[in-house]
Image 1: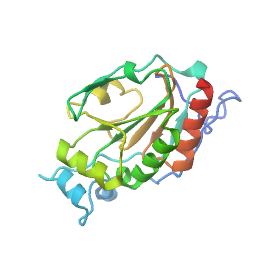
Image 2: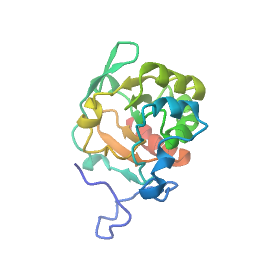
Image 3: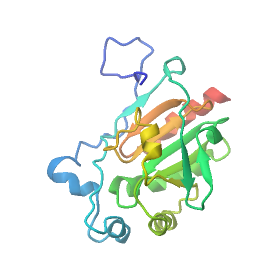
Image 4: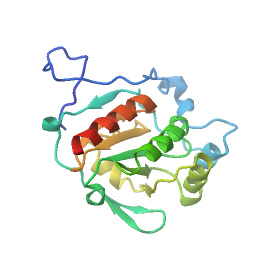
Length: 212
């Protein structure tokens, strides 16, 4: 995987930079793991965790941004949408895209959903948005979307094919993760964990500006 720009590595070139969003201390590790699975009074979380399944460990909110010359090859994946149609990485090319990995029982996913919806509305003519649902059956996913007003599509990734295809950028234990792809389908930025709205807005804006 191409190395991201990181403010913590002083040996990197001066052009390197990183945006640090609201970093959630790794609260979902160890005894705090339950905070990333479900809350007792959240019906969506209860549905998603039926049968005693636990959620993934959330990311720490760290942000990586890749300069155009540092980006790897365009990503490749194909997935089935909940309506039975298919989506591929190729179908997202031509304009920037925001790809968000989520599931209903993930507390940070619920917390960031309103911000993702707002950014989708702001950039709907300039950037595409796609959710990738890692765990839920269709009724649970659709209940989440109704509850939070999510009006951009999501693919089902119960078999983990999209996660595997993007494993260089999306650790399986870091949910949510949000990728910003450039118009060529290359990863321009990544947020591990809950995306801070202003940070994600800046990442999308930078990528949209490149393609203008």
